[in-house]
Each structure stands twice: as C-alpha cells, then as structure tokens.
Amino acid sequence: MTAILLYLGKSAVALAVFYMFYRLLLSKETFHRLNRIVLLGTAALSFVLPLCVITIREVVMLPSSEQSAAESVASSAAVEQIAASEPWWVTALCAVCAVGVLVSLGFTLLSIIRVKQIIARGESIPQPDGVTLVLLDEQVAPFSWMRHIVMSRADYEAGAEQILVHEKAHIAYGHSIDLLFADVVTALQWFNPAVWMLKSDLRALHEFEADDAVLRSGANVKEYQYLLIKKAVGKSGYSVANSFNHSTLKNRITMMSNKKSSRMGAWKALYVLPLVGVSLVATAETKVDYRYEEQSVAAVQDTIKVNTVMSSFTVKGNVKIGDLPEGKPLFVIDGKVADADFDLKKIDPKTIESMEVIKNETAVEKYGEAAKNGVIVIKLKSQEPQEEEVIPFQFAGEKPGFNGGDVNEFSKWVAQNMQYPEEALKKNLSGRVMVSFVVGSDGVIRNVKVLRGVDPILDAEAVRVVSSSPKWTPATKDGEPVAINYTFPVVFVNRKI
Image 1 (cartoon, rainbow, N blue to C red):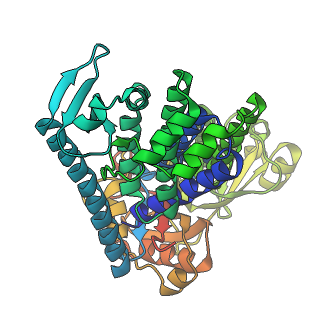
Image 2: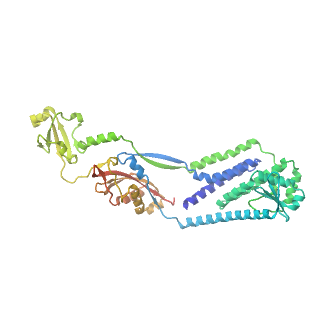
C-alpha cells in the first residue's frame, strides 16, 4: 500500500509541475491544438514517468575463494527483512483514495448514462457526414457527444448553422475522447488541484478550437459572438459532453480577438523535454551487483596439488620444486631418520608443521653418506586438536544443504528469525550486508564475518542471525565431509523510508 501512495504522490507532483510550466509558457498562446496535445501528453507522462526508473548498477568484486559463481547465483535470492507492518494511517489513506476514485468514476458513468438517455428520447436525424443530429422538443443547451449532436427543435428551426459547425468541429477533433481520458485522470488524481485546473483548461481549448472552426467557415465574428452571448444562459450539465456555451464567455470572445501567436512561440512546448529528464534523474536508483573474481579452475587445481604437500606447513627458506633433491632422499621426521622404504604419502599433510630441504655437502656432513641424495627434514605438529582445513566452495563435490533444501531454504529461515533493530528503524537504516562463514564438516556454522557492511547495527544483526543457524548438511569431497567457505547476502529493507 505504501508503494501505491508513493506512486500517486509522484504522479501528482509530476502533473502539477508540468501544468505549472504550461500555464507559464503556453496558456496565452493561440496554438490551441498544440496546447491540447501538450496537456493530454503531460497528463499521460505524469503516470508513466514514476514507473520509469533508471537503474545504475555498481559492481563489487568479491574474492573467488569465498564462493563460486554458480553458488552466488543461488544466494542472489537474498533475504529481505521487512521492517514492520503497514501503519494504520497508510491503510486509511489508501481507503480514502480508493473511495475518491470510485466516486469520481461513478459521476462520470452517471453523466454518460444521462447523455444516452437524452439521445434515446430525441428524434435522430442522420447527417451525410456520419453525424447524428438529435432534436428535443424541450429547451436544452446544444452539446455534442461522440458522433451525436443534441439541440432543441426550436434552435434547429431558427437556423442553427453556426451551432452545427461548432459541434461538428468538436466531433471531428475527437473532443469527447479527450474528456473521457480527462475524467479518468481526474478520478485517479481527484485530490490534486492541478488536475482540476488542467481539465478546465482542456475544455476551454476544445471551445477555442471549435470557435476557430466556425470563424474559418466564413461566419461573421460579431454575429457569432452575439450568438454566444444569447446562448450563455443555457447549461448542459454533463461532464462528458462538449456544450456550445461551455467555458467562460469572456475568455472565448477575447481569444477570438487575439492576434495569432508567432510560430516561434510553439518552441516553448519543448519545456516538456528537460522536465522529463529531471524526473528520470530524480527517480534513478543504484543497485549493487556482487561478482566474484574469475580464476582458472585448472590453475586452482594445480595450486591444490602443491598445497596438498607444501602449503599446509611452513617451509624454511625459499623452497621451489627444483630445490627438491634428485633420487630418493633421506627423510628425518621429528629428529629421527626414517626407514629406507619410507613413503611420504603415509604422512597426513595436515599433521606436518614444517619442512626443510638440505642438499649436497651440507646433508652428507650432517647425516653421513646416506644423505648423498639430500635430506628432507620434517617436523610434525603436536597432537593437540587442530582447526580443520577449509576448502573453496567450488571444489566441493556435493554442495552443503539446509533443512533438506538449498540456499533458498536458508533464506527463508533467516527471514523468519531476523529481528529488525529498533535503532535501525529510528535511523531509517537499510541496505545489503554481505557475510561470509564456514560450514564445517560437522555442519556447524562458524567464523561468521562481515565482508561488506552497511552500519554496525545492521551488521551485528546479520552476524547474529546467521550465527544462530541450525546445523547444515555438510559438503562432501570424494565422499568425505569437508568444511567450505560460504558467502551470503542479507538485505534489510525498511519499508518506512
């Protein structure tokens, strides 16, 4: 409902601004058709522009080791925590707006019904140009609606050539369609004073156009003005119809006497373009796309192969593959010389604390002739429990799961268990918090960290709710449970903003 109110508010502001510039720049000009197009076009734009939101995307790169591109797509269904339910006054305003719209449309519908009833009880006389003339025995102010012209029989018999030209001009220009459109716009913006003034100016333009058509047909200006004065006492009373005596008589007579505007004045209509540009800029928004740095899978796998033996422990000195001794070296483990048939593969790399390679004369001097092919000195870690190895997400064979599902299930769980901080509501804080964590081989979440925060208040809540997660189904590699890194976006949306 808040979104509806915001949309109506933006539309109202846009319509008021467009109309204000019309009054300042074009309302005194004699470009009746151009002015009419500007009024109708800006009214339509007022409802379209709030829906045209230019999105400016900001790309933030995250380390590829945190999460694979495939997983990032899955987790892009981020959790949106709604700040609070709609306040009562929002619901009340929406109800008032809805009632106003229905009442306004009701009056329009009632006006159409009454016009059709009048047409139904009159005598219909088809005209050669496809227009139907409807004559009534009672006194009625001449008016037109769609393809019908309604007037009293007395006016017709008294000679109504100018009246017929006037009303046929309304029909030829499609003024009835304009009025229906204006009625719908007025119904949707009934609370906006600008829309009522716009509608009044539009009806006046209709009369100016029709009056101009009468004068161009060869009618005498003074005689036609006298006819307007004579018919000024009548009223049609139907919002959807174009009445012969509609609009302020003084304005119509003044407009007939005005000198035609210079064609250069028509360029003023271009005021619409900068206003459209300003509107689009004002409603533009920035969205953040989180992407992961590309890294060759082959390169990572090569690194894994080396790390399996080398990077799980500290190597003294700058040891390269070329530094390893040729032939079968002598192995010294925790100060003890290993058997000749010792195989390094028997040692779990996770248990090795450091490795040192000794070659050439230094090895022979220290360990004798058995060390002629070099010595690899290995120091094992103490037997105290060590933190498990965490592998990149993309190298897990089976991805981790949550509550029998994927990351979407975790998103739902976070949404249900998050508590939007009161202080964040007061400060109108919102945004996306990117957190990383480890899903252990036992399925327990640990090492929850904020990669990209919004505010310490929201960051803390994101860490709290993620840390309180139940156990996951751990990822596996080669059939064995493994610990993996995971990145997850938590989006806080404060609907009160």
